[in-house]
Amino acid sequence: MSSAWPHVALAELVAQRRDAVKIESGVEYRLLGVRLYGAGAFHRQTVTRETSKATTLYRVVPGQFIYNRLFAGKGSFGLVLPEFAGAFVSNEFPLFDMDTERLSAEYLNLYFQQRPVWNYVEAVSTGTTASRNRWKESQLLAHQIPLPPLSVQQRIVEVIGAVDDQITALDAEAAALAAVLRRRRADLITDDSSEAVKAEHAFDFSTGVRRTPDRATGPYMTPYLRSANVGYGTLDLSDVLEMNYDPAERKRFGLQYGDVVVSEGSASANAVGMPAIWRDELPAPVCTQMTLLRLRAREGVCIPEFVFHWSMWAYESRAFLDVAGGTNIKHISAKRAKGMAVRLPSLGRQREMAAELDAMESALAATRAEAARLREVRVGLLERTIGIESAELGV
Image (tube, rainbow, N blue to C red; front, side, top):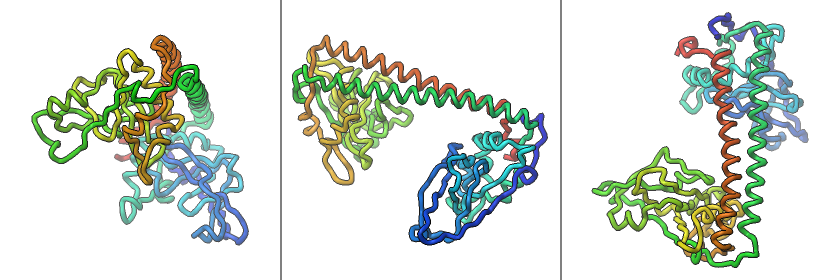
């Protein structure tokens, strides 16, 4: 679509503004940053003369276009929103006013939300080292963009805005569903009408093997899961490694359908105890590394879905973190985990709980999937309206 419109250098459409202000003692200055991947401007920090290395800042005006010279190749572009009136930026964040009779600020912002544009900017940025590459103001001003009539620009902004509003609504709905799910899971898992037992009487525990050089090769190379494969109730199987497990180890450490794997340790408290359930996503045998705890339902005592929801509750309530030892790197030992309390209802009641919570999980997953689908639709709409081919960019 962009080839049907004239391509105009930004120097004809925008003008850089540098409203310099000397930092004074006793005054606080709100500084803006610009998030990566088109996520826009945000309040980064508040500084004073005593806490800032800079001596000069630049005042922003709502409606201006802003970008980060250092991270332009990663989509660090945005607009100054009305809520940022009176804020400032450092020298690394150039600001531009629009010729509003020819260019919509929102249209320009949409143009710079395209990955092919980011890739081009990354390719032509210059600096002394790759980590210090900058897309300079002169390069931005020389850059040509497709320029439809202002009425068409505004229509494009309206259409994309409608999609954005729906994505925002779905994200809010997903957040609300997630909060309700967590509260309901906590209510069910901690119901004191059920007897409390030690976790070792409800689940079988196992840890995997240590990754050592001698296991890097051998006749029984076997896929295995590690902490990097386990997220918040999810498995990431895009990078599954292998090491040598002999037949006896495959039997001992191999995963079975319904096993729950729990991230045993991490330097980040938020990652300690993250659980996921195994549903034979890969052909057997698949084993585990020592960085994971494996919890398996004891036959006749509990069901795998109960183990999963109990583990999710233990993560969400930080019960796993509470039993983790260590200082810099928290670590859940199998011994400590076995001593955790489990409110153990009857098998029938466990099935009822699992059915209710699984239905809520499904509704949440469907909402998130719809939001993800709309994000793909948004990308397609940008491509069909103001999208620009790599050839047009000269790469």
